[in-house]
Amino acid sequence: MTRTPPNHGPLKLVGRRGHPSELEKATHPAQWHRPKVPTIAIASGKGGVGKSHLAANLATALGEQGARVVLVDADFAQANLDLLLGVHPRHDLQHVLSGEKSIEDIVLPAGKNVTLVPAASGVPELAELDDYRREVLLRAIGALEKDADLVLLDLASGISPTVASLCLAADEVLIVTTPEMPAFSDAYALIKLLHQQGLKRPPGLVVSMSDTPEEAEETAHRIRLVARRFLQLDVPCLGAVPFDPAIGRAVRRQEPVITAFPQSPAAVSYRALAGSLWEAPEPEPLSRLPKPQRLEA
Image (tube, rainbow, N blue to C red; front, side):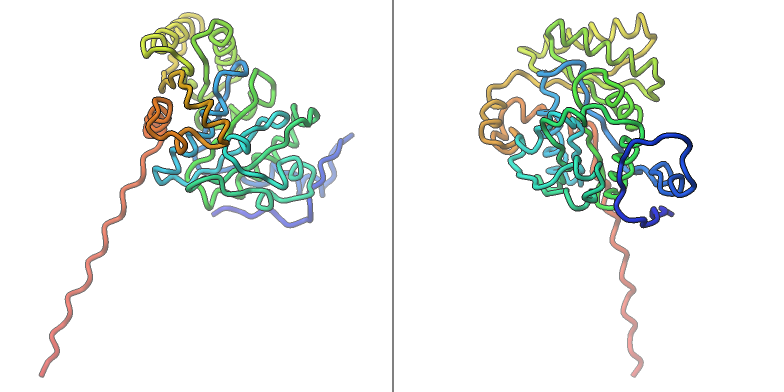
């Protein structure tokens, strides 16, 4: 049974010195519950590789397949999922982390079966969350689990402590890269860091912006080869998204390419990846109705 955290009013996140009091221990988010639904973190070693496009379109594709998705913009200082999805939030995670709003106050619909948890943009003090605020975020997301089948976290680019801790808290990690050497190198650096910090299972690779299927396959093969040789780690390749001008046109329309150009190569690839990550549960068979009893004359 899930235990509801005690209601002690809005939570204020302030600097702490010395040992926590008994009240602070009781209200600390470590006493709350984390999400129980499967959580997928989407990360990348560097920016500009299509990570947020993957998050927005993967959530949309999963929603089309019937999954109830909570999409969290966890790039706290440079959030852009609201722009990619064409929604206009009034409040965001900045207000949750300051205690001004609850997470239920800021969520908004962002497509069929998709709920967006928006974040702020241009707030550098949120770029790196301390341990306490990271816990607040995870526990707040747990409050939304009753209406979700999956939680997707769109993380910031790079190998910061916040990115690493959120990856370690997730059930599955997707690392996005491109065939370009800097992206290839930074993706491996992120895999190495997560492995050294005790990631439970190897992250999955998604190769973006490849010109041909062969180029995507070669990129994934090189990363897998290096990870196997130096980390003794078998990194699976979960899919590839080709370079597709339709993605740029969809961005200008502030709409996922899945819905803007559903037959485009990128949309087809996003749907294929979504299908490999989640399967709709089989409907339970209808119980047989009892046969009507014959009335005695």
